Length: 158
Image (cartoon, rainbow, N blue to C red; front, side, top):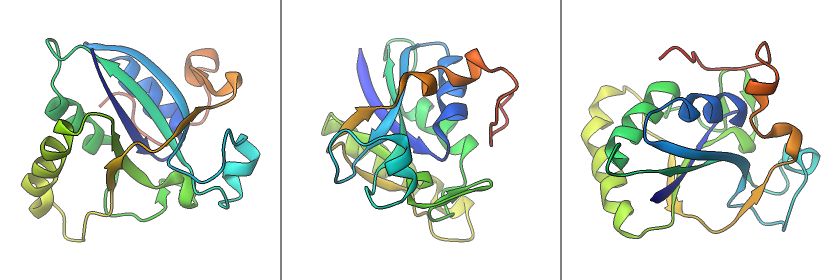
């Protein structure tokens, strides 16, 4: 099993989207690559903790590759939008790919280079090692499964 962390705006929809993909065996939402230990949602929303709303993804690479996950991720985000996705604005809604396996860095950067010309503007999605990840509060976990009519900025049918 491998792990990758995707920040793509509000984590509710990103988690729900990836939880439906064959080969993804676990998802959790949390706060990544900020400066405060164990922040609360309210603290993250102030922008001062510099965390991104992020989805932890554990996947079976014999079923789905990292490149396939990246294709699905770029299908649901606007990688040229800085600190916002859909109607959500703030640095916690930035897009990012945070890796734990150094071998994944080349896969990620090569993939972005390959799709760069598909966009008129510069891709601003962060690519960096995961520095920290703190689980979000329980009510955020599997939010759209618990609240099927809840807010989602992405098209879950993609």
